[in-house]
Image 1: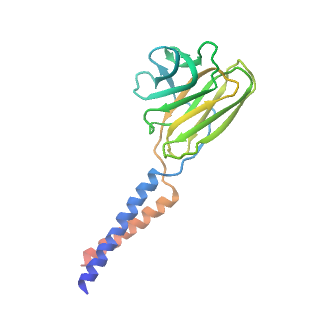
Image 2 (image 1 turned 30 degrees about the vertical axis):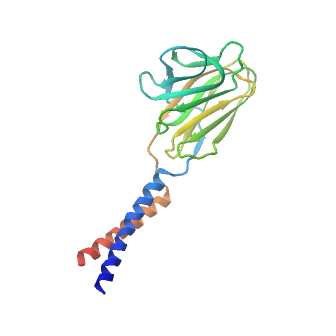
Image 3 (image 1 turned 90 degrees about the horizontal axis):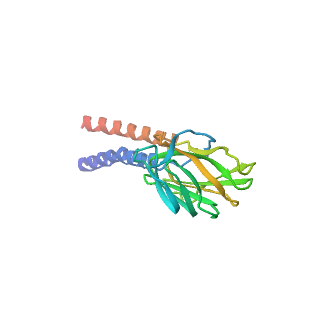
Amino acid sequence: MRPDKYLTIRWIGWVPMLALLILGFHAQRASATFIVDIDPGGTQFFNSSAYTNVSSFTGEVGQNSGLYVDVGAVSNVDSGAGFAIISPAGTALLTRVTFTPQDPNAFGDFSFRGQLLEAGTIHLKVWDNQGTLTPFEFDFAVAHANQDFQPFGIISLDGETIKEVEISDASGFKSVKQVNFSNATAPVPEPGTMVLLGSGLVGLAGWGRKKFRK
């Protein structure tokens, strides 16, 4: 009977360890929640050199920060050195721009300003680093053409980070500027993971008492 007893105790010992492993998985894979924040602040996107008539380029969030973001456009664009202003090259129609951080764990919010060629609605999509295939989608109405609109942005509520952001407008952007990102914050464990942690610790304590009495 004693070998069976020891075998049972060993199995009990694995329970808290398994619970803690599951807790770590849930803490890292918590469901993402992005919401609208018209001006979350952050650090401005910066070009170390000018780009002319290109469909993609790379800049940094902050000067000499090493936090690189790749920019892709549906048509060729120009963007000067310094705090980036992205505008269509020549007579090109700029209807879509994507921003892809090279470190998908780096940023938790995004915002921008600019001008539209016509009054309309800007559509923003954001993909999280959790790997969700369906993006979060938001719309921003712009009442006037050829005027700077107010900052538009999104922010993560749970520490999830930005894999990619896409902004689009059917009539086209005259310019996209004051692009800001903020560093991500640590995720807050969900209530379910806290319960799991508590269960694991209780099991660990029970196992310790049994082992001590043995």
